[in-house]
Length: 230
Image (tube, rainbow, N blue to C red; front, side, top):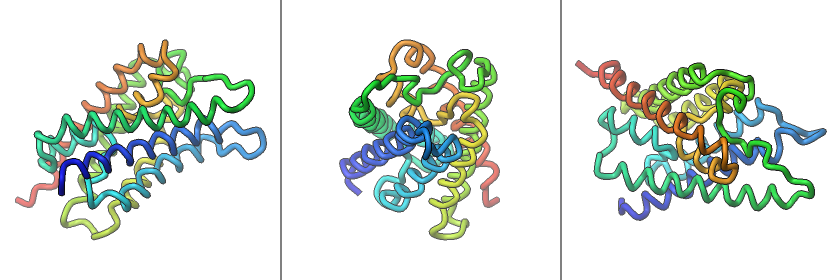
């Protein structure tokens, strides 16, 4: 598969993840009568990955997430030569999704950023959780996400069902951790909205790069042992 098509797929997929997932939080979660709530937001994020996994999984692998690319690299499923290009287009796709969301959301009279679905800790955590709690949550949730991805895409796993397991896994992760950090587990998702929120969101963005990558790398190491055919 030509690298340009892989990168194009990753850009489109990450664009959809941010527009669909963060869009559900910004545009629909707090709607006075028909708000979908955080359960709906969790499902929306899972659906973005589920739909894109079927749409572009055969083209790029449907990473949509720098942490996923790192975890697959450490797990021996992804070449190091493709890591940087993947990360760059994932971040650009996330920012593009954030830009379209901003244009749509700001078209409402009286629009206020109100966090713009950004990830945060301390006073910017939905539940007021500390930096340590946020760090542990992001590491563990990303670790489990990569274990699900690596296991579901193992050649010994049931064929064709990986997108379902991965999408439902991401939904569950959001159900657990939205109150803690607004759930990142994805540096591109965090960056895509933080650049528009600015200020505090950018100052806390480091956590949502470091913790997911640490969790993903640990999962890559563990699954190389866990999934060994020895």
